[in-house]
Amino acid sequence: MTKKEEVWIIKGYETFALFGEKGLVIEQLAKDVGVSKSSFYHHFADMEIFIENLLSHHLEKSKIIAEKEKRAETINPDLIDILIEHKTDLLFNRQLRINANKINYKNTLLKSNYIIGKDFITLWLTDTKISLTITQAEGLFELALENFFLQINPENIKKIWLESYFEYLKRIILSFGKPLYGVD
Image (cartoon, rainbow, N blue to C red):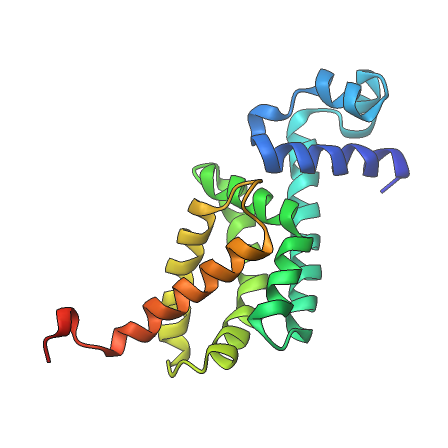
C-alpha cells in the first residue's frame, strides 16, 4: 500500500467507524485528506474496492489487538487500556454489527470476533476466576459482545465506563449460581 492509499484508508476507516458506510462520501473524504477526488479513483477505482480495503485494514487492526490481548494479564487495567487505545477499531466493529445484513460486513465481523475473542475469553476467565467451561464462556462472550457493542459510542469508551461495564458483567455472571429472588 502506498502512502497516499494509506492516508485514504486511515481517513475512511475513521469515518466509517463514526458514521458507517453513509459517511463515506468521496468528496468529503477528499477534502478531509486534502487531495482531489480523482486521487481516490486513481487508487481505488470505486467505493466497493475502497470498502474492501477498509475491511482488510480492520482485520489487520484486529490482529494487533489480539497480540496485545495475549500479553494482557488483567481486564483492569490491561484490557481496558487496550480497548481505549483501539477506540476507533471498536467503533468500526460496531458499524460492522449494525450493517451485518451485508455479507462482506458480516464475514469481516465474524473473522474479527474470532481473532479478538479467543484470547479475550481466556483472559476473562482467568481474571474473573469464573468457573465455566469453554463452551459456556464462548456463549456468554457472544451475549456480552452483543451487549457491549449496543452500548458503546464515541463518548463512553473511557476508563471509568469500561471499568463499570466489566464489573457489571462480572456481577451478572457470578449471579448465575445464585437462586432467583432469594428463593432456594
